[in-house]
Length: 324
Ligand SMILES: NC(=O)c1ccc[n+]([C@@H]2O[C@H](COP(=O)([O-])OP(=O)(O)OC[C@H]3O[C@@H](n4cnc5c(N)ncnc54)[C@H](OP(=O)(O)O)[C@@H]3O)[C@@H](O)[C@H]2O)c1
Image (cartoon, rainbow, N blue to C red; front, side, top):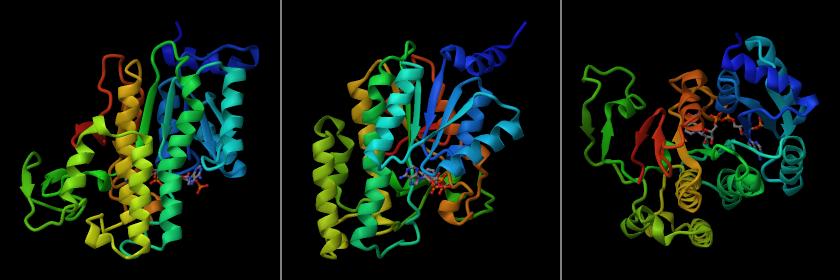
């Protein structure tokens, strides 16, 4: 008798005969880092995965090595640059004509602007917000009509970051690991860290960000424009915006907001955001403390949630967390 994962793989092999896989996922930026590992783990779970990358050769090489190393046949490549409208439309047309539906969308790309920790040029900040937030929003909008066709209620997983968390005064020991590799404190201990600055120092905005009922895409855009103007006029600190990784932090804060807006709007889907942990990838020059295999687990778990699972939530790796 076939295991269910073998059955899914065989269904995927039969695409040429128009067999529709039970679960079909799109992963953006799947050619390296956490995205690549998410593709592997989902495919091993029997999900048919469309690994996308903006560079065709890098994407095809990634599919070939995944299929070869992990003996998989249910990973397909399609080009996708989330910032290119034609590329987004081409992916949507391909999925529509070949499958007519999409069950899982995992996105959350990153431009490597983390080196600009405190000082960031206006152009760098615009690029960061475009890729990390607007690109994610645009690809979600392009694929939403197909996600609505998922018979089991689609899953959307947006990659966020610890940098998006509005709370910072209390760090659990797990987070303390990021700053101090070894500790003798017990695992479940909550550690108050005195005098740690708020990530979002503007208290009024912090309170507003907690109230999802007052946000929509237009208000997010207005806030980002105000942020960019203050950055241009060197007023970030004065206006109470994040001063560490300012554009990156803002991009992830609004990814969280957008996730919650979508979750409210589409109660039939499970839509969540996931902080992967401090993962060893190129984004941090391979200084992360957990391997991509571990960093991918939260996104994979959120992709495979049951229909009565949480929605509009923030996962800190594989556990439900509080970011707002
Ligand atoms: N690593 C960490 O510690 C960490 C912590 C918190 C959050 N995250 C988040 O996790 C996500 C994945 O990060 P990672 O660590 O895996 O980074 P990574 O190894 O640097 O990978 C980034 C991926 O994004 C792709 N990308 C960039 N711009 C794109 C565009 N316009 N269209 C399509 N793809 C694009 C890159 O493609 P190319 O190869 O073509 O450049 C690459 O595949 C990001 O959202 C990041 O913010 C990571």
